[in-house]
Image (cartoon, rainbow, N blue to C red; front, top):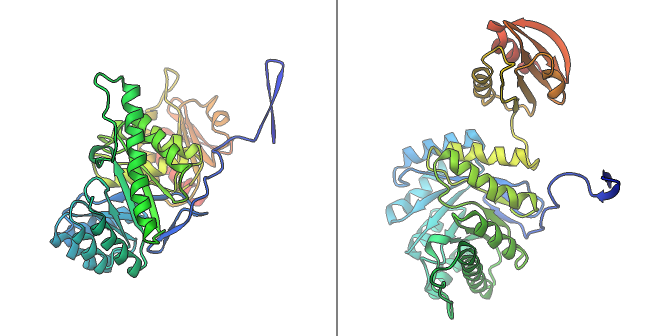
Length: 377
């Protein structure tokens, strides 16, 4: 318990950081636990044609190196579904088959050894076909993900139409109710078959709707939640939208696995996920770079140096904090919680550890000396 003094008042707070995690029923996707007491799991999706096994495996290997822990692939036709067996034999992380429209592709993917299938309630609506997939998943002892998406919501019985001329707020509320109901109806169908190894996702491009839909469903069900802002965009705006949507829920203790849906190299999705987890103090993977924004006091190419250090740090797996600061006077003090740092001056700078100056180096040696010190930590 901490005490905070504000304008002659005393407020008692329970420390600083994310709220306690929502307790969910764990499921196993291959060897990876999702939910329960497991860390937040990072996943991504291949952009390759799944039937092109070599290209898909090569991309998955790059994603594995970046820290991806679960990978999803498209299963839009029999050729893609049949490729899953060979892909699985050549990768180390669990593989999820993404199923739309034809439930037979799910049956084929399960037969090929998929570790999970994602079903979209908006695209497979026949309860008999869904039950077939449920029975196959139960026999194979794999979980299913109910993936509700804003862009493909199913028609719901007695569903109200969105009012004409609705404000953004009313449209968002209408969307949230439809997303939650779609998830509830599909969950009920699976539960009627005695199937409980379920993971849920409710995704929307509207960040407010995505956050509110997940808040509501989190209070209604015990199953783990996969978080993401769907079709978030190109890496820069998409990362911001994802960080707001995913980060808000994680700070509230909601969420068990995440994906940042970016229009770009899926490796960037994984890197963005880890930055969100790092920022929310939920997981640390590899080194953290602290860098000041630069200003008129800087007498070195601070931004260039910070970018070079960031690239070099990608090859390290140590959980250390490295600082690149532009001011010799204030740098060590501002980044005193860093394990190691450099603060530049005119033509030279200082290397410091935990705020204490170790030595002075010439500007031409900044990068080399800093990385040498980092390797020795």
